[in-house]
Length: 605
Image (cartoon, rainbow, N blue to C red; front, side):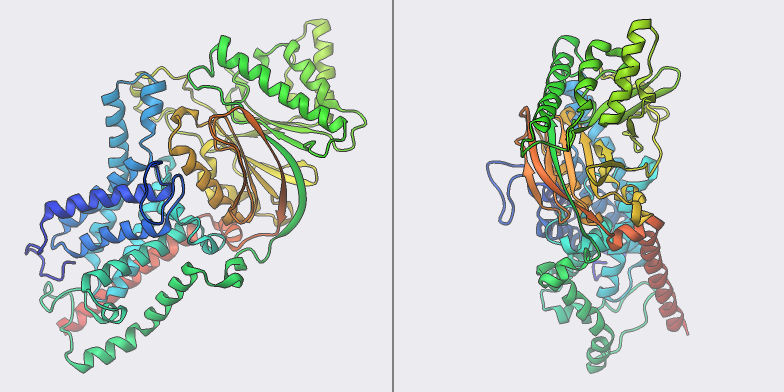
């Protein structure tokens, strides 16, 4: 792809291009959420994504691929770029393994690099395939690059349980916001890859857009039997212009959509969604230090005191008819770090009695993160929904059991229950053959049971709430499964998280932008209740309307507007998952390959 015959050295040194790929991969990571407070590049700001930086850094890789003459070199450059990008994206895994897990620093760093390097193989194979199957036209090459890059992203997000954290499309949550409800994060990544390859080709040729569209991918000395000899003179110009004019129009339209596109375009993807009324909420941020969270004398005591006190204040506000009284209080993932049966009646009876709220016109309901289960049944990472009716039933049953000393299963008392479906490898289950690795860490790991996909929403204050826990909001296609029946689809999304495991790092910012993109894709507001941040309210346009400072103990009071109706992404992802994206990208590969073979046959003929 260097415009030189295979087997000959490209003009630029391989070591220099390898270094540039590493630097560009680091910038790709930084584009997801700028990690530096003290300084920034033009167009970036601390904690915020940069769509243009993501496109520009990916263009450096594309340029490096256009400057190599060997398939092995192409794969190596793609792998280096992806390793630097992924390691720079989730380097904070080091904090959980070393700071909180007690793993030796060198071993924790090696584990992060090994994970990044293993996942980078998807992208190394993708660019190797690009080199091997590259068509003659630059515009067709751009399509092939975008298709193969997107397939690598899809494979990383799906295979081996999937770990799509840091997908390039998340950097486009602002720049390509209008595309999110149409094509989703992977579709946005496809468009960004297309623009990146176009930019690289323009730089490569040092000319205008027209020169890029009219230029061949190689000189007239290709491998035997691959490309037909090119016509010369004006024939090239007019034939090339006729063939590539549609590509030029589409590229300009894409650039126009990214640069703004007008108000009608920006609202197009959510044209079928409407307001479903409002809901007053309190989102709780306990800020319990992770190294104390499961310690009885510190973190456990803090949680068992602070969260019930906040719920009590909410109930008092509702009874007083205060204007800020919430209809819903949300406590984060494992806000209660103990099983319900480990907490005696002295904890549950006051809490449940307060939630009964007789005579209150707009009573408080609570969504509470906690572990559930038993050794015989298995354990789940769950959320309980406590309403006045279920609280009254549980209180009465618990009071009767206290008199008779009979055991009570609170989970059977009519509480709404959500069980986490997509579990975290090494955190909530141990992959086969890796028990030795988790045994090296001093972290309360376990094998949790998996909840079902598309669990029923919870009705609160005229809204239908769909909870998700921790990094489940990373899987938009799984959240979209709840939209199969539009009449019963959730009107509000709720994320309960605890990423204190990763300290005060860019992971907090990255997770916030992941939630923003889910809100855009599905046309729903997202409530985020977290232990250390980012506790926030995000509207259906992906705009953060309310935000608590990180690493503070406080509550976020807000009014959120629910939404009904569905976006195009919600409709097709609910029915087919990510299948359409797989299909489109694979169809492009087959079409380009067929065109390439046809050209080879014509030359032989």
